[in-house]
Image (tube, rainbow, N blue to C red):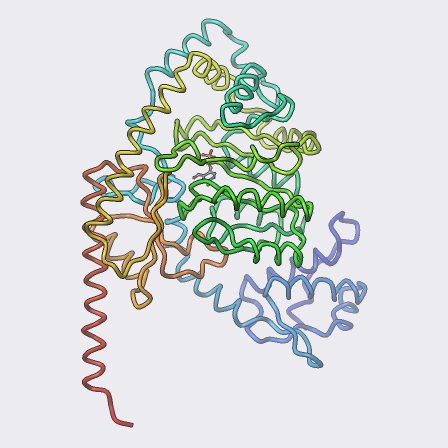
Length: 496
Ligand SMILES: Cc1ncc(COP(=O)(O)O)c(C=O)c1O
């Protein structure tokens, strides 16, 4: 009971008392002050100690249980979950490694200069259209002078919004200017959606695996994250329907074209079924379109937004980072009208507005038609890398490694044979100067240990071929070592 004496509950705070108590106990667990299988105080005693209602304690224990932090023994009480403790200590051990990997994933730390970098999904700086953009920037400065540096409307620079409304007609997305919001990159878009739509304890369904940046945003709002498996043609619909019925999510977060990390694209049939299902259960969809532009071997890169004919179901988030310049921090979202006010409010709180200078420059870049030329150029570059990747994987990758060829995009997703340790593979690859993204980063509990993602965005064709050859050699050696060890084990197998 002593450990609970310092818990502070403030009755004059707006936050519910049970949420305060839940957070206090969670902190005690995270700080290691409660041990695995330790019993929590009986409800009545803790309520008396803190001068609160029994129901408040019951509710907070309930949230802890839902999060897997504690478990109940009927007739005995509530105990600290051993699984959770194992999870924390494993995380502690791997904290440094995983956090540096997450940073690579976001393109935020430098992979050593001589490394072949399959980890980053960010395009190479050599491909950026610097001269063309310099020209439009100069023209904007001459034309708009100081106004280019004024605060911009939170919803975005009107001429740019008009231009984008026209542009996405080409992708069969028909929308009103009022429904289009400029954002400082898709990550901000996802974050303001989380702020505008989610309350503490709401559920969000995501694909498994999924994009870590989105999961982190939803978690930061106190949302419960539930995942649903991906199949070769998109999300597992049966499982999705079951989980929608059980968890009644606020929205589901999907990447239907060249999903990150798997590269999987939903079939058109599945896209239509997802829309039907969400309509039936009145669940919103957040569609993250970070890459549908790079469509090499399929005619279908239909977005869910284009199937949302009444603009009532899908919040569409568009990133330009993979096809343009990520450091510009520009993107846009298209949302149903009922979210209009909340989204503008959340955007205003986040950064007031996206840079007016850059919005004006992008508008000019679009209206000149330079954008279209650039996208064509990027498509050619990426397609060449994509084809090289497919060729090298066919040439070198051992048959024990499983994969599905995507039809476009920049990500390839592989499954190691069960007997190979992802950790060993990763360490050996780093020693041989090849970096990639281990699969566990993309799962909500980081539990996966035999997938990995290779991205072709930051590597040239020679590096792709050399890198795949190195990785394949490492895997072959790991497989052969395993086979040798098994043989030895069999020879010396004691007779029991
Ligand atoms: C699937 C996905 N969505 C969103 C983002 C964030 O994009 P932006 O740079 O536009 O914020 C990324 C970045 O890697 C991503 O992979």
